[in-house]
Length: 123
Image 1: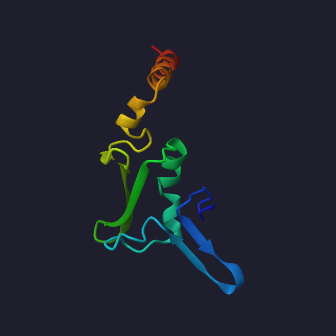
Image 2 (image 1 turned 90 degrees about the vertical axis):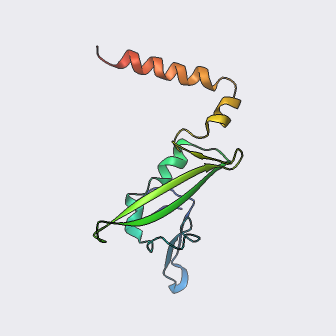
Image 3 (image 1 turned 120 degrees about the vertical axis):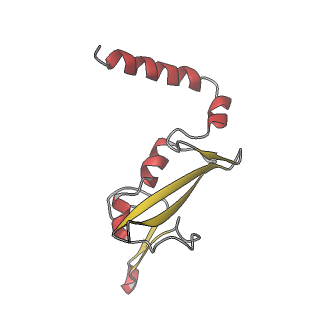
């Protein structure tokens, strides 16, 4: 569904049909210590970009909204996990290193990308 920020996110839900006015982020439904979600949080949320970069079926994301410096701001924290290997992920944009190692040809593709980046940089 399209978020208030204009990005597509499968975790955003809105219902304005027949007088309803309901908006929610379903990643936060199970986090009891998080601040309440606001539609303006979608502007800074990295989840749609992560899901666009990594389409793994085994990717599990957790989102928390934390106060910043005496409640004057809000920080969105995303934690990523691989359900298949039960490990936390350092970079959710890249995905699970074990899953990536199991894919034949992926290493050659990543090396080709690095080589093209090196050639594009000025000396």
